Image (tube, rainbow, N blue to C red; front, side, top):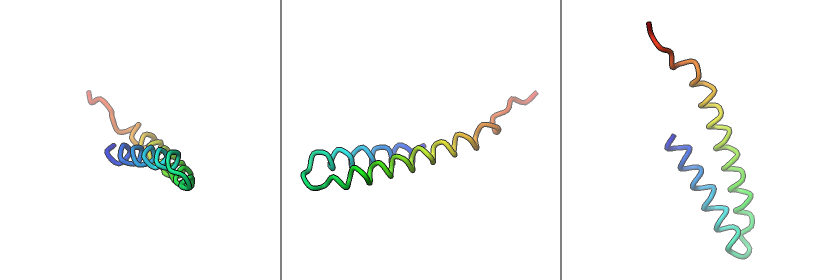
Length: 57
């Protein structure tokens, strides 16, 4: 989960810098790529972890 939050914050910072600074609009595209990788990573992690938590009797 810390990796997920780190990538999310990185994507938001890159997008913010790309929007505010003139001529750095390519950072918005990089932020979008980082965000897409972050979401795919989180979805894979959540899909793999569904069957592990079982209650024992």
